[in-house]
Length: 102
Image 1 (cartoon, rainbow, N blue to C red):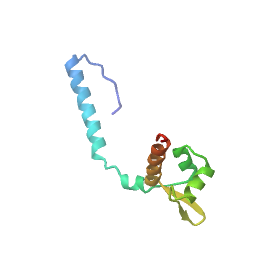
Image 2: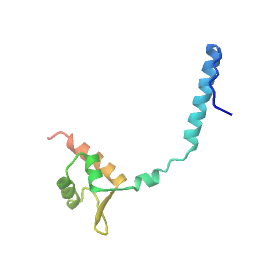
Image 3: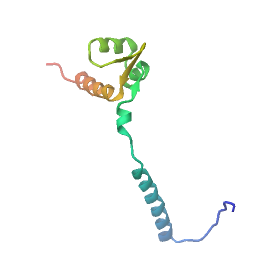
Image 4: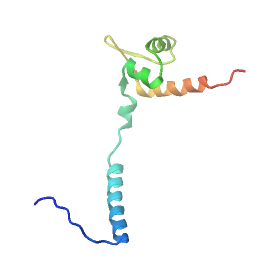
């Protein structure tokens, strides 16, 4: 059976009902799919990705890692950062950045 377009005359209420049904099905589908926040929070990021998120340079990231402002993890010869910890650092930095000097 081929897909075909059938044009019918429907009134406004019928159109609203059809749209409502389609939207409700879409929302139900999105809600029923589980979101795996645990894996996204433990996702490991490269140095370059962290720099893009924090809007800093690689040397700044290196100094922050040495000063323990952000925790880095060595995997063999590679350095990685956890997404959750990067987001926490982003909040800390933005709070310190815009704090008034007394």
